Length: 140
Image (cartoon, rainbow, N blue to C red; front, side, top):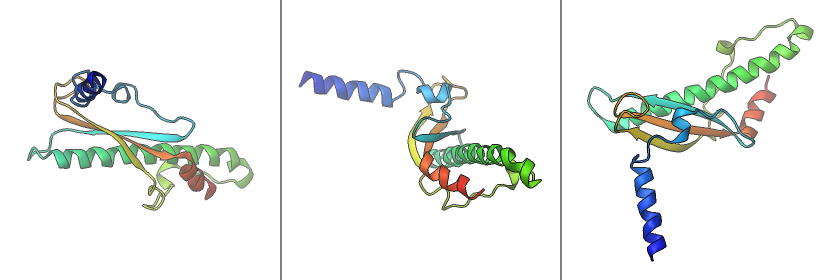
């Protein structure tokens, strides 16, 4: 019983942000063996709506993830550009909603105290499996 209580207490302390920001807020992850990650944040909206702040943070995390994928596409295309005499730029790579269909929201954290910047900033961590990224890369 005491272990269960300790576990619940620790989860509450961590979830409430009493231990400071999650590691991914201060040290953005980009990729590991299984996933590619994106991080986004948004400040308090003019109407102080936390759902809007979360939505904007998710949008920015998706943009971050999308930019990383596009950069990878460009890097791969540059290896082949000498044989095809073509140049691909990041802004010319188009990703569709179906490309991003497998994105998962891993974590959401609201900086109530301003430990990672401004107070009340919402942070979101998203990820996409490399298998989905590989399908995108195969088109280029």
